[in-house]
Image 1 (cartoon, rainbow, N blue to C red):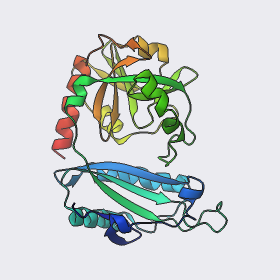
Image 2 (image 1 turned 120 degrees about the horizontal axis):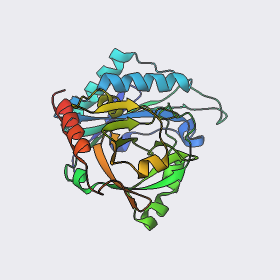
Image 3 (image 1 turned 30 degrees about the vertical axis):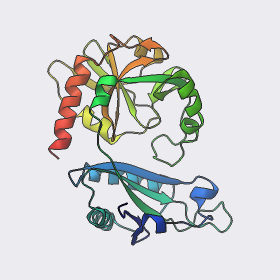
Image 4 (image 1 turned 180 degrees about the vertical axis):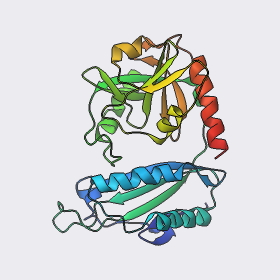
Length: 274
């Protein structure tokens, strides 16, 4: 079994030696933030974009990051060098700290965890079956560690044989618990803009160009989604994955669409050339 390392507050330690005290607000109250990116062939993909979001999340949650961006980048690079894992997932976590009363924010703890990860190319062709749920995340623009609703509903997903949830707010589409949503209709590619987490992969898709295709941010309803020609999700780990079914109803032909496929090819090329 290989030794793998984790970064904890300036120290790189073996995974089994990485620990936090139970007084941390992340344990006491579920208070903290994180961000997640991947490495491909040893390169941390779009890392500056993830740093932007991480520092913004910290500001919104009144958590002070002791490291500046250069120091955080050096911490990441040190861990990457120590573990020497070419293709991986990298999670940067900032907790509420060791609170004396279990309620007040203390000095945050910074943890960086690296795990093996390789993109599953076959998943694109399988597509996703989603189950809708009326739910609006609190602090939607902040990437917190709160995944209570999504985790609570996992047994229902298994019962319904769905792959993931799609959140809507009284019929207005928002996002998946760990991904953004896009729909394609009449050669327009549309993604919601209200009360969502603005994903890094989402932002890259918005910058892509396909001849004769308009890509924009615009809210739409669950009814619009069901009537879409194509639909897909975007995330750091999944790139673009087609949505083939929502609540048992097929989207378009029920197969990955041509526009979705073309956008995925462009996105993969952008990642590989990073």
